[in-house]
Image (cartoon, rainbow, N blue to C red):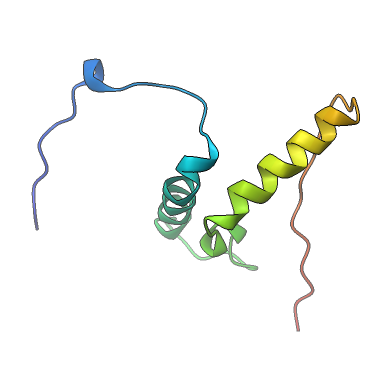
Length: 81
């Protein structure tokens, strides 16, 4: 097992993610859901995230703002065999 050095909070920067961060956001999402303590049925949608997912959400949010909508709700729906 490799030990990583401790992170110092002073070296972190918190900011809104941009389209440039899409791949990293998708990687983080997959990692977070992959480490769940137990299986779920259906499996979490976060395991299927790709760099395109945050880009699609950003486009949907832009369109919602363009239309003057106060809220955007995204849900994944999938039929199970």
